[in-house]
Image (cartoon, rainbow, N blue to C red; front, side, top):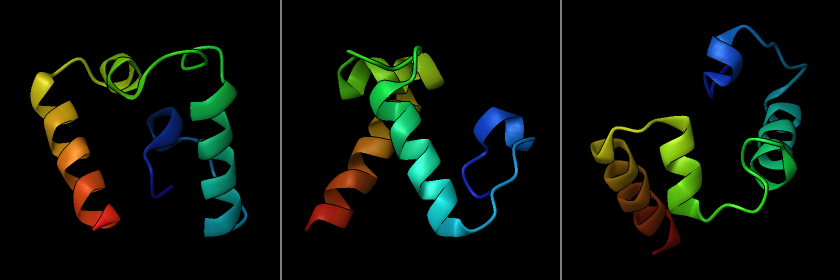
Length: 63
């Protein structure tokens, strides 16, 4: 899958269904629910460089 979800073992019927699934997990999944963006990024990948790069990409997308 495009997001590497579940070590890329999980398949999705389409890109939109994958986006919906990953978004729901990040919002309400047990590993991510109630966490800030920084906490979610750390839970996914504890390397501090990862969080910096993702947040930079988020800023670029938002502008």
